[in-house]
Image 1 (cartoon, one colour):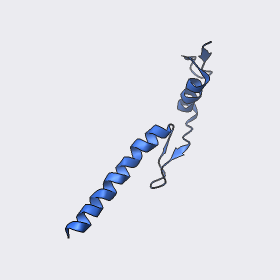
Image 2 (cartoon, rainbow, N blue to C red):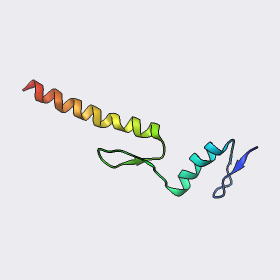
Image 3 (spheres, rainbow, N blue to C red):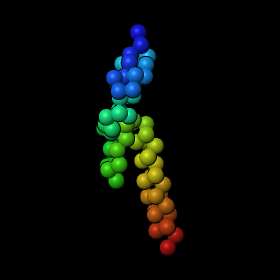
Image 4 (spheres, rainbow, N blue to C red):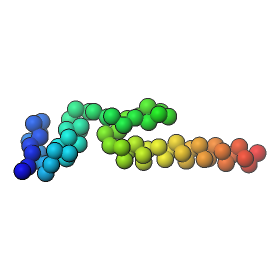
Length: 67
């Protein structure tokens, strides 16, 4: 059975999809970066974001070892 969003009337296929979709309306962002406190709706987005910090740290370490 299809589930309807109470905010925008969009239909979703399952309760997980509805929960994820509802976050776009509620601004819920439960996955937060421990380095900069930026928060995301999905854990996969947080993991992708963390690579920014990893690359920056690797760059700093590379500069330090070049000295």
